[in-house]
Image (cartoon, rainbow, N blue to C red; front, side):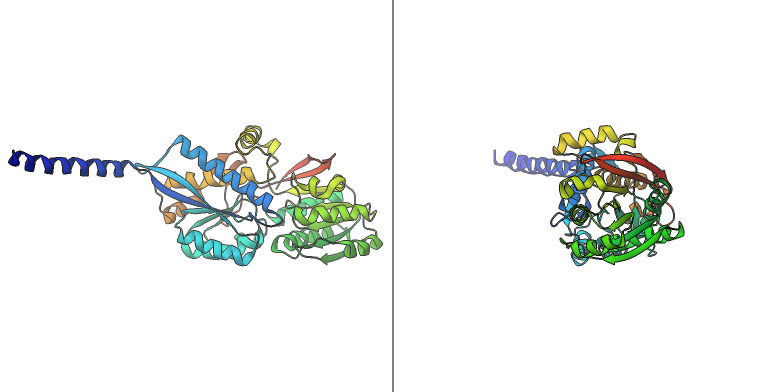
Amino acid sequence: MKRKLQTVLPIAAAAVLYATLATSASADEVVKIGHVAPLTGGIAHLGKDNENGARLAIEEINAKGLTINGQKITLQLDAQDDAADPRQATQVAQRLVDDKVVGVVGHLNSGTSIPASKIYSDAGIVQISPSATNPTYTQQGFKTTYRVVATDAQQGPALANYAAKTMKIKSVAIVDDATAYGEGLANEFEKTAKALGLNVVSHDATNDKAVDFRAILTKIKGEKPDAIMYGGMDATGGPFAKQAKQLAINAKVLAGDGVCTEDLAKLAGDAADNVICSQAGMALEKMVGGAAFGAKFQKRFNQSIQIYAPFTYDAVYIIVDAMKRANSTDPAKILAAMPATDYKGVIGQTQFDSHGDLKAPVISLYDYKGGKKMLLDVVKM
């Protein structure tokens, strides 16, 4: 009896070991994709919108199932808050590198994407910004920087051309928020405006935390421009437009994608109806999969899209597409597969040039009627 027990015990132990090994072998490999946007501060609603787009993609891919090189993969969104602050952005970028993410979707702002890009470049991790439009972001010589929107070198001229040729304005005052995004966009607009023969009566700077614009606006009122171009985000652009109306300034307010959000009407009140703005990508209503994506997003998060959620959604799928083509979760191999990207998603066909910019960028132009954002025109660059 004793002898039989000694024989049975090793067999039982072996069975337990085999079961443990089998369970371990069948367990999914967890692969992290980073996402960074401001989740606190004045533009947190835009940051959460971007994060939700990325989260929706992660959830979908996991539900469908993903296998890379014979291994089942579970994706995990490593979501971080940079508070739209350049210093915090670099700290968060290092945190994602330390977390061993295989790619990053972000940052939202140009002013955070640019300083963070050096950290991702040093680590050899692909970074796809869904909304950073300053041209400098992809002109630093890094092989890791990509974006799925047009640049301000395209957005600024598109807005200036529309103002001059369609709106027939003759003079414009310019105000920017002194960030990499706001100043960059305003400067690109100004260059084209002057080339088109518009009279730029002034160019003033404020900051991205300002709440009172009455001093600048009072000065501009005396200059009597046909339009005012504002380079900044909706958190400041809304009050800017509202205070312009309160001062009985009749000039149209022109703005870029940072202002061109669903929340602008809440921030500007009925002054939103005096705003014409651009978006550095295809309008949701013109995207082939836009309506379906909008409905899916609304169902999952119980809110409508602010602006760039479809772009973060596609950015996640583009990283996974590179992962599939590389047949690897190694960041270096994913990065090596990125230049050959040819992905058809919600935002359209995505292909990159040698800098990581879109080969076929699009600018959409909007106004607001009764507080509702309305598409005016789509310009292919």
